[in-house]
Image 1 (spheres, rainbow, N blue to C red):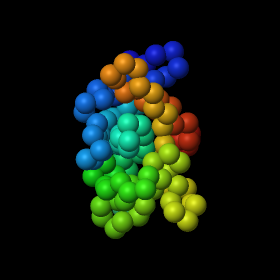
Image 2 (image 1 turned 120 degrees about the horizontal axis):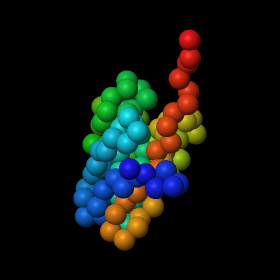
Image 3 (image 1 turned 90 degrees about the vertical axis):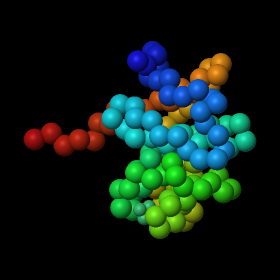
Image 4 (image 1 turned 90 degrees about the horizontal axis):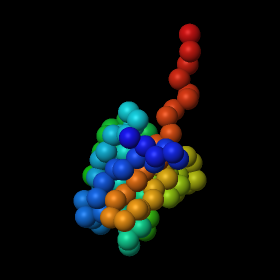
Length: 113
Ligand code: FES
């Protein structure tokens, strides 16, 4: 259930370590939540290269997560690749107490026939 701004409780802060991402599904979107120096980031868990659901398993270095399959990198704040091209969808995160909330707007890009 989401609050009036669309945030959904996604995890307890103890569940998200700097050792790796955690996967959650919100509004049919598979997201990966990362922690870097006590800040939390949420990005799509689906790599745009081969649509592999592996981003949460990637290593994070200098704010970029690397897909474990072929090494494509994505910035945790913007989702962009190092060359500036768009990469991953990113999501707003807020921490309330010891809970991480993520806002995952529903997609409105489906084609209606
Ligand atoms: S599937 Fe992610 S880089 Fe190839």
